[in-house]
Structure formats: structure tokens, C-alpha cells
Image 1 (cartoon, one colour):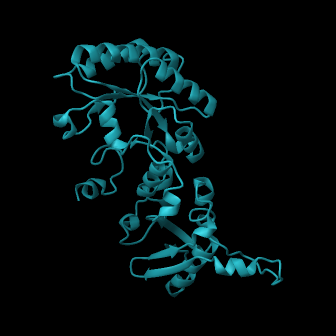
Image 2: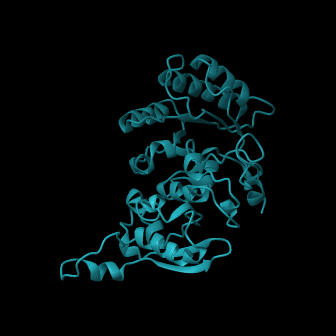
Image 3: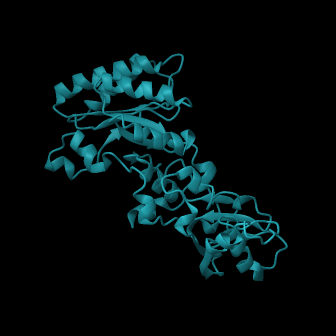
Length: 322
């Protein structure tokens, strides 16, 4: 947490307490103490600050589970990352992690398959189970027709010894005037079926179903299944926690691969506080939290970006290596 300009650093504890209060049962105005005011319960359920680290501007907040509807992620987020980013007392705040209790974790469906289940669908033998699941994301992101997409997918799946596992759509390739979803899903899956017979390896096409209308997304999952597909791709941050949760509960029996497009408008931070060791320059949550949330909601795999490449380097390569 970074206190606002002009506020004495000695007010750090008060700032932390204000964050805890605003994200739980606190309010900005005085409430009359009456039998029906709710103040007694509010005091009972208030959040508590602990493990203060003033040097590194860190603190932890404990919340009672009574404050949350266990299986409602949208409702949950309205607490720890609700109004606190708008408080005048702070000019920077980063949520580093959330440790969900078992009661909340188990209230969500979680992945249908997970990595082990994906390997099962690929029918991998012992040798391949010890290797990474390998694939390719054709570039440029958009520009090919559905026919060209299918031709390229075939080339990628048959490259080398034919053991590449998947081909993936990019985040902004949905249903475009020159590459309609209904054409692409048919042609690429037809190529997949033929390549599987040719190579003897099962394949995945991570087909982007993203749409702001959930009914359209469900129709797209039906099309994937009708052509023998095993996987969908969903822009989970852009679509929102409600869409992801509902998609998992509707259970179309497809692997859900999550693309994190738009996450950086929530997660990006350029200060030393990105790793908990100094100042921060804005308001953000860590990608680690988003990954936890979407795992709980039911995604099987997630696009993790490309450390040491074109994107902002948060030290992810070192964290992954450790």
C-alpha cells in the first residue's frame, strides 16, 4: 500500500485499518446505534489487519467467511477488491495474494479435466506424459481465411514427427467477416480428424468461442462437439467471472482453455512493490490471484504469457524457474 501524498508515513496502520474496514463492514459515516442497526453483527464480522511490514508497505487482512456467499465469485470480489481502490487515503494498492479457505474453494466446480485429464483425452503414452504438451499459435493473430487457417493447422500438426498436440486461436479471432466461426470450426476440425488418422496422435484445436452473448458461446461449443472437437478457448478476463462460472456449470464436456487478454489493465504494476519489496505506482491485483480464481471457476489450462519476450517482465521467468 502507498499512502496518498501529504499523509504522514506514521498513518500506515490507520490506512491499513481503513482498507480492512472498507472491504468488510466499515462505512464512511456514523451509524446510529439502535437494536436494528446491524452494528453488533458488523463489529463481529469486521476484517482484521495483521502481519504489518511497514518497511515494505505490506500487510495482511483476515476476513470471516460469514461475509461471503461461498459460491459467488462476483460477490466475493466486491469485498477485497471492491471500493478500496477509490479511497482518498491511498494512492497505490496492490493485492498480492488471496488464500481461500477450503469451504469457499470447494463451493466452486474447479476444472473438469485439469492437465492430467487433458493428457487422457490426448491418449498420451507413458513417454509423452513425461513431456510438455506442445502446440502453436499461428501468427499473425488475424488475417487468414478459415480455409487458410485449416491448411496451416494441418501443416503445424504434421510438422516434425507429427507429435505437436494443439493449435490455438488468438484472443481476437472470434467470428470475423473474412473468417467466420462456423467455417473455421468445421474446416479446422476436419483437418484435425484427418491428421489424427495420418499421425496416430490425438490433437486439440483450442477454438475461440468468446462472445458477449452467452447463448452464442453455448452454440459455438455445440458446433465444436458436433465436429469431434475436445477443447474451447475463452477470453476469461474480458468475458468475466460470471460467464466462466456458468460455462463450467453448463458442462459442455470440453476442455476450457483460458486466455487472459485484458488482464494487464488489472495486474500491471511498474514499481518495486510488484514483488512486495518497495513502492507501488497504482492499483492492481496480481496475476496469481486471477489464475486462482479462474481455476476455481473451472478452467483446465491458462495462457500464461511469454516471459522474456514482448510483454512486460514481472520477474515471472525467475518465479517459474523457482
